[in-house]
Image (cartoon, rainbow, N blue to C red; front, side, top):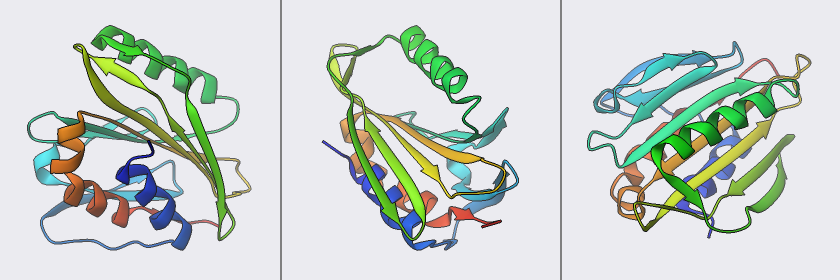
Length: 167
């Protein structure tokens, strides 16, 4: 099942929305072609290729990263290694949905998985804005099903804040 998070990724990025809502932290730049604003309570921090953040109770983790075709395998291997270390087990075949909206190629990967014996939400959205540099955006969500519902307003605000530039 494609979650609300990834449905919003498609909707927000496809129309290029870039709203900032009250109570949000500073806007962080990703790969010199995107920016995102994350709630202060999520303790966002810069990572090698972008930003990571987690909900205050750590029920939802989000990563927004820049990559190109030469680095995607490395990025995905790092994610796989991380999730394995955390005890996440993939339980089936990844479901992929592809869409084109306003010149953006979007590939959504919904990975069926369990963590601590319960279903967990593990999803990726790969966004290709057709930039001359070849840079793309990877949005990742790992959440409990309850956390995904509880923090839907926050994840919606985060996604509303994503802005791609340089197109």
